[in-house]
Image (tube, rainbow, N blue to C red; front, side, top):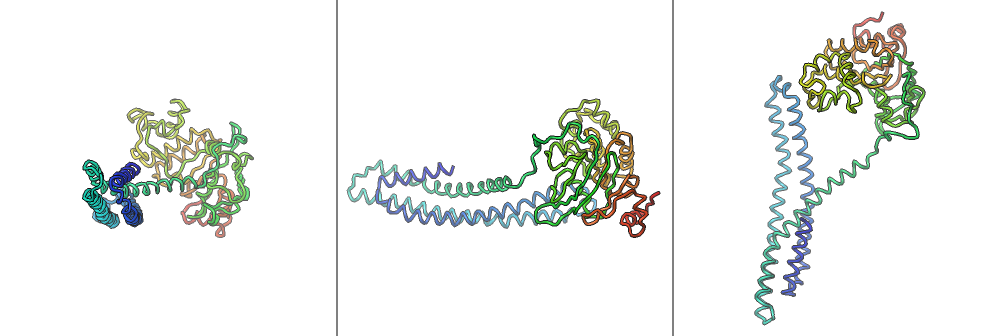
Length: 447
């Protein structure tokens, strides 16, 4: 539309100039005034558009948050407060929207004025040319005037479409900005792929490992040295901010090492592709990751397992009866985020997914933090069953009682390993031991 209207305006000026050549002298000053008006409006409009976009996003975010927590809002009788906050955010957006309307009117008045000058000039010069006895015909005068009457609309559209082009170019800028972000390591390094059976034993070594979340920040894990034997059950404890979850992120290479490395079965995980690494590790996260689709899609996204295997893992996860009672069984629909399942059932789906993953290493990242005691007991019973006896299990502890029967326990503080040993050994340190104090605060005993 920008190019169409620009061509239309230029052709109109060309027709007027060909009928009355003296009009060419007026084009230069008019073009200067028009250019100034356009640039002045463009700068203002662009900034107002940015203000409008920035103030509009919080409206949608607040509305979505209100829908997500509507039961809590009603339970605490805070409907009025949330409605008022929504209105305040809309008002804040309108404070940027109304000036953009006013700027539009400001532009319209000036462009109409410029258009009127062009029409007046075209008519005036035509009359002068005819009255002075030139060879200008009535038909050519009519053609020039009919084109001149359209110039105002074309000028309006040129400015507006110029603004649209610049506004849309902001989107291109953002795409380029995201495209320039440093990407993760390659998914597959073809010259260095692990054996199909890897990791066969499940031994994990942290070798002088340090990491940070991004360049310039402090280290979140500092000089970690751990030697986890095959099939060991390891508990990881520490206060908030000690680096427990960072240990999990490091194992999956969500964050890359600043120093040192992690080896699994004597293979440096930094030398292989991310896909090869992450497919060989199983995890039950604190917040179960479910997406809209069927039970089958959530358990087996790659559709590589048959129904017998899926029903088997559902039975081990204590979900078989519930899934069988749903319409469609394995083809039963799961809503976005698993909203038609309880929190405990979502965690059990994660457990079933972990059972399907052909890995000898399982990570539990505070997997029972958000479930009830009964579901916690079900999860713990399954994890202690023969199904997991041949797996190395690393448990990020939220409840101390869930890791008291671990083979060894890692105690983290400020990103450093302060204690590493069996529960009995760590309790033997007495009051000077961090694990001892954590257990006593929880009111538990280690036998």
